[in-house]
Length: 68
Image (cartoon, rainbow, N blue to C red; front, side, top):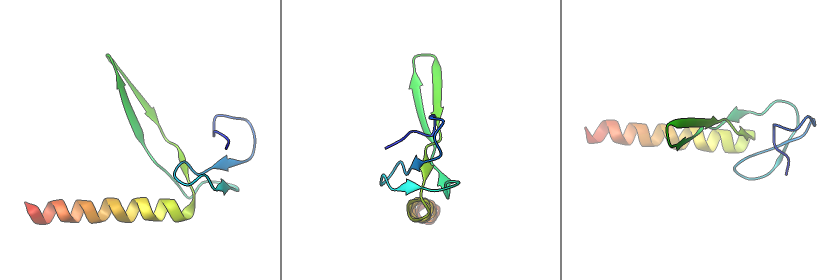
């Protein structure tokens, strides 16, 4: 599995590990607080995982809206 910090052309999906050719279909966002610092990482996602993450986020947002 390769990081997108490498200079190679291949990326791997952060969620499933599948090789991504070309541009990723989406990117996640991970936020890590460390003391007074805030680290943000945007790992690549393949099309299948980008769709799944997006649909899950939308479903949870709708669920929260309905709960009030």
